[in-house]
Amino acid sequence: MITLLYDPDAGTLSWRFVETADEDASLESECDATLLLDAQGRIIGAQLDLDESINDDDLTQALAHPQVSFNASERTLTVNLVGEEPASVQPLEEPAVLDFDADERLLGFEVLPADEFELERRLERLAPFLVERDQERQGEVEEPAIALPPATRPVVPEGPHRSGFVALVGRPNVGKSTLLNALLGQKVAIVSSKPQTTRTAIRGILNRPDAQIVFVDTPGIHEPRNRLGAYMVKQARRAIPDADVVCMVVDISRPPGSLDERIAALVRKAQARRILVLNKIDLPTRRGNEHLHAYRALAAWDMEVAVSALRGQGLDALVDEIVRLLPEGPPLYPEGQVTDQSERELAAELVREQVLRHTQQEVPHSVAVEVEEWEEKEKITYIRMTILVERESQKAILIGAGGGMLKKIGSGARLAIEDMLGRPVYLDLWVKARDHWRDDPNALRWLGYTE
Image (cartoon, rainbow, N blue to C red; front, side, top):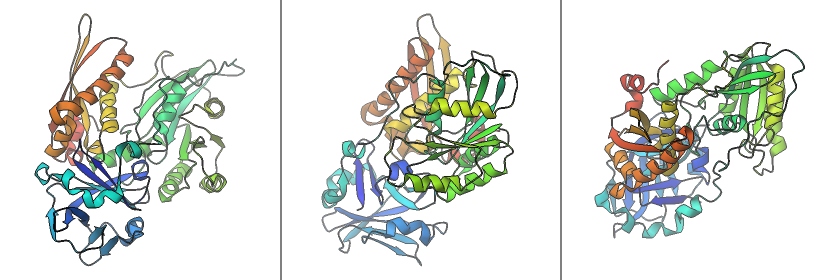
């Protein structure tokens, strides 16, 4: 069944062809869109104007619904939920945001009508398809409120000290950043249910008496649709040949797709030792053994380890196997260092994490955060940051009615930054729009997304 989600705060209407669109979305794109209206001006459907890059195979999940049709000659995808001819149409000024899974199949889309359209009063005919926001969020699992202890069981060194780099690679949303934070026992990488949360290669350092492991958390490898996406994929690909051990992290509750196969091909070419990390063992699945055999077939693995990054299960076993495969050598970083990120970089990421947590598909991937000012005062740290978006409509969503959304984002981020710094923080947030910054080389360089 097609489901719809109306977000009154953002003024958006999300259309979904599968139940797990939020969790599975790995790619996004945009297209022109039109709403279909009945004689009373109520919404009964939508029409998308697709470009040539989207083929019939990409639409299989959408076309599985009888309410959806595709005109190949005109490249239009029509969703008519009530089966009657529309009395009128409403073109949208803002493009629709399309969500695709890792195999580039369309999962759903989101539209943002102008305020004057008065979206809320036009939803009566859609009632059988609408889900409540609370219902939508059932089953979402946040990170544990209490930090897990680092995966450093008491070890008595029996041989020479070992050290090296360990790349955590995989497609988006398999839990690489959650795994890194759990291994270190503290947050060094932001996490969310949105795909492509990690944008740069982040190093997290785990020390044991017998070893130092430098984990490299990489962006999820995906099909890039802009310069920022291409930068992220390049960061991930570069981490593989530079690593001593490559951990390919997979979601064992799902079978491997074509993107997993492409990532495994990169892993096979590396000279590094290879570990298959089967994450999310806490999620129920009826076909776990089938998925396991399929992942095993992707490469010749030196070892496979089953873990739940969210629940902290299997982490010590994973660390033991990594240490066994590392080369002999002295520590590469000072013993007390946990990450290569500065406090400013991590603080900016904590603000972006709150944006990801509180906004829907219209905004998250279009956001960057820059620290403009950082002043250590006697009793408080003053921080001014700018949240950058691509369109004025996204700026309005982030600010919210009466500034409510920005206050919610700022409050959550301030608490996280205070926890990191161990002192009070005054966080001053501003929002600016810069057209298509993700495809602007100068903007990417200015924001630090450079080699």
